[in-house]
Length: 327
Image 1 (cartoon, rainbow, N blue to C red):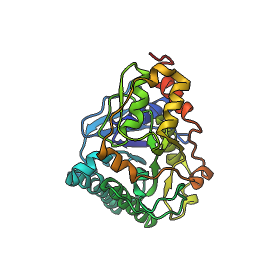
Image 2: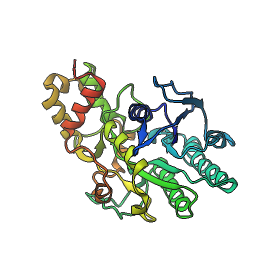
Image 3: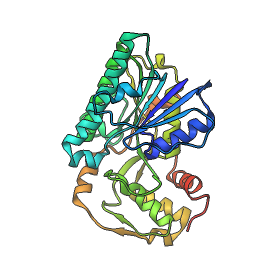
């Protein structure tokens, strides 16, 4: 099986690649070739597997066609401009998140017209596709009314994925990721970045800024769970999806206050003392329009699994990123 990972240099992309290299197979099918693509050429993993690393911008005509030259049977499409950046830069958000995705889908369609080609496409969407009115817990059939450009772009791509799949142009699965925490590395431009920052920085002995109230409630999963979602989507029986190709992933609902309480249980009061309250109206305004909790029963019935406590999410970060040690 040839596998293509678009957005391979991002945090989730790097962890997905590590899992693919470790396992050497997806759903029991051996990986014969692996292509890693991002705006900047990803670093090649250490492996005996045949790996090709390329710089690619899907929004440029011809880029997707080049990536499909080897006709990968499995495509992970993770590339996106994140929420706050997509809101601040309207044109860039639509060019990358929407136009780039449609050009990929069209390239697959045209490849299939030349010869038989119908790959599995796993697309990362977002819970930002939901907006007001928001119940306390969102069911699987809740209407999509996004309140951000990022959420709108993802919602449009979900519709495209469902339609291209319905027509047999590819076999698509869209997974709406919870906010991923605790994200390793440096903060990115996502409006949700502080959810990780208030855990990651204190665990490393650094101060972190909290721009919203502790009453803010949100939906979380760890990076480890996110990789598990992707791999399960890649191998699952998509006949079980019917024409409903997009799924809200399981997660954990927690307030910022509950995050902080979990941090104290795991790392003590000194870690919590490193969190500084620095209110930011822009961030608070964006987060206020986000959903807080989901049922995600359909995804659970289909075998997707997330965490059950924020303590577990913190401990996964310590194990995976800090070698089991905290400063």
